[in-house]
Image 1 (cartoon, rainbow, N blue to C red):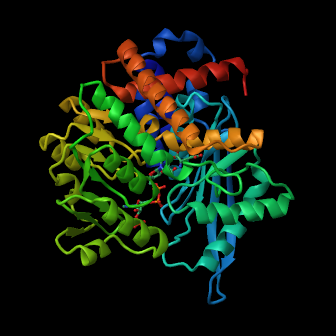
Image 2: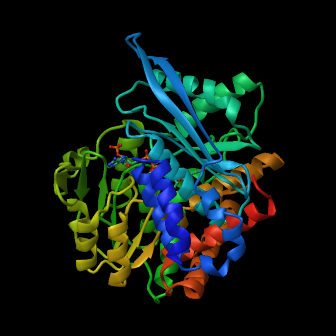
Length: 453
Ligand code: NDP
Ligand code: 2IT
């Protein structure tokens, strides 16, 4: 069946040279689809594959802002509106110096399938800027967010495109962007999700990605009559997703031993309890400090400074039962995956988007490890964003427990969908194929219904 998917891949490589992250995301999905596409001649005839890899719209814009010294700075902003077959474009905004078109397109592509898996009416999109929030004052962040929105506002809307947070964009940035949108449009609407809970935000949206990830992992383990209780867990990253993954793991009786950031990783073999987690939250969210400071506060912990020339990360070489990469793309390379497999890690569930390289995924799948791919495992965040949109549409706010019930139900549905599609089209427990195929079929059928657009 590669005769159907290979030309699509070749066309992407030809049209989008140099976009290596986008190539990687497309290749992974096409490899899964090559196992089933023959059964869907209608989708082939109507060129769904050729269309699904082409963004509906890409918006690139200049973001000028002045720093605290009064010096003009210029960044590049972007929004990739990938696919609106299932609903308005939906996906986060990332502020990080590494942001480029390839990264935006891979994220928007992944988001399309992820959002389909939630069962909600959400299309796929992603945006961001190559702006580095590190070391910036609060006023610099506000000026940047206002300038970013001064261009983006004309392209988005609560029925068109609804951005949210991602790396470098949390509650503070969403607030500043919302304020500017409201001012320009003279309209208080649900145009962004992740808003403050006093002014339209859903309870549990900040927690949702991490909590959902742990619910998903618990289902995967239950499939093998296992639980998280007493399991030693590695977490990378120390931002939004990492923190709430840790919080839920502690609640489920697991032992969390690590966090990281882009400078290094810390490992605390005694376990990171609620008090130590509160320290990390304060450090990262209030003081915006570095994870290295954990060791200053808890000297028995180990700290490993990353060196970009290192062949593997010391974090993934630690002994553990479960691994939760929650930092960024391609943070687990082939060597890291080998270490995890050799150390008999029984589960890896992806909180970050595409944190495992394709070679790494191969190693996980062939080792018999349970592997929860990002587009299934981290879908809890966008799912609660969808619930925030529902609450905004009805001018109501649901209780924390109502939202949590929905999140539980959605994560369970995603898990059973992955199991079902893996069993039907691939090998049992191959949730990569399960997620890719299920997300694709739902999106593709909607595209078919809506004609050649
Ligand atoms: P945050 O900005 O809150 O935290 C990001 C964390 O990852 C920080 O600890 C950061 O370290 C680290 N990090 C970022 N870039 C790199 C890098 N190049 N190398 C090593 N570490 C890095 O972001 P989130 O927690 O929101 O996002 C984390 C991941 O989860 C991303 O892949 C995101 O796409 C994904 N995700 C987020 C969702 C959400 O709702 N927020 C939903 C679904 C997925 P440092 O402080 O040094 O930059
Ligand atoms: O990658 C993701 O799913 C997100 N950053 C969240 C997107 C959203 O719209 O809530």
